[in-house]
Image (cartoon, rainbow, N blue to C red; front, top):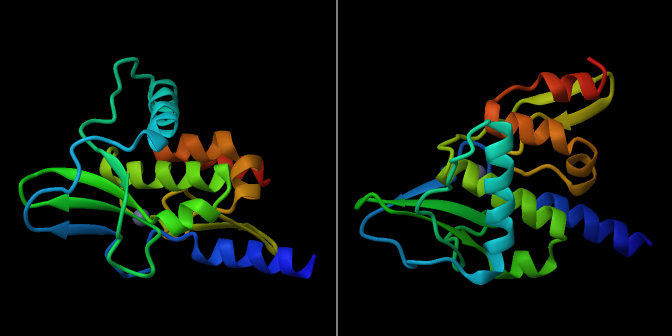
Length: 176
Ligand SMILES: [Zn+2]
């Protein structure tokens, strides 16, 4: 049991798109590595699109030209990254070793976070929402993504915030 707790703790610590004050959207010269997405990520991209249509009330929403693939994030602190290139192209790169050890829920939050950067043009949001000693990350766009238990508990509120920046549902859910 202790080992399981340790593993869960480590997963939370390392499920990171980036560290505070570090660049999470890497700007690079040249062109992206991949033209199309790895099929592994198809269902996640479809879910993101479906949620975007609902929460933005935009039936025609599309992610845009943002392939998602496994690769080198070029920073040991990054398990995923949105790269933007000087020729205007973008791509999401996910560290395969992280993916292989992550739950399906953490995978979803990670892909949604990176598409938050690459598709929604969102920046990081480190705001914490707390009531007394109870602390919750205020956004999927936190540089260290929310853990699975909070994500599942507040999924509707987190998706509302991701697409609309509105934190009121999350605040209401934790009783502020
Ligand atoms: Zn990020």
